[in-house]
Length: 169
Image: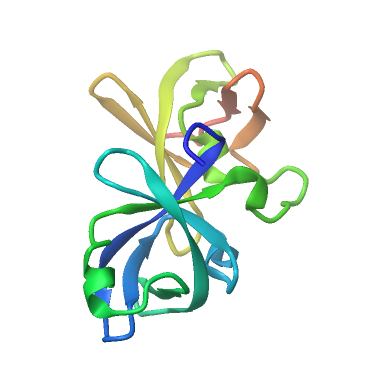
């Protein structure tokens, strides 16, 4: 899978129980990446890795508990701690028109409707009411609400996001 169009979906935190399950911090918006029989690629210390197939999973209070067919005991699960899990972008579920995966937006240039450069979309915060784009230009950080009333256009090919900032931002 190395070198293909892959997306970071989780980090293995630690082993969970005795059956080889692990606790993971999910970065993916789509819980379907942890559905049974989904394949994930796990990196190793050299940047190589191997494919793992989800046996079962369940959301925890803050993280996911995931068991893989290939990991049978706690010792094998402990060896995965700290490693990242990836999926092929093509394996993600289709999304509706005018919606985007975060991975497609992060790294985009953000400009206002007046063409003022705000910087690059560094990451996205999930909040209770709406997501928030964290845009950075040098030391300056701008928090932009990810609302249809604020986001004027998204040009994936051109790598640019245009926003109409609310008064006061």
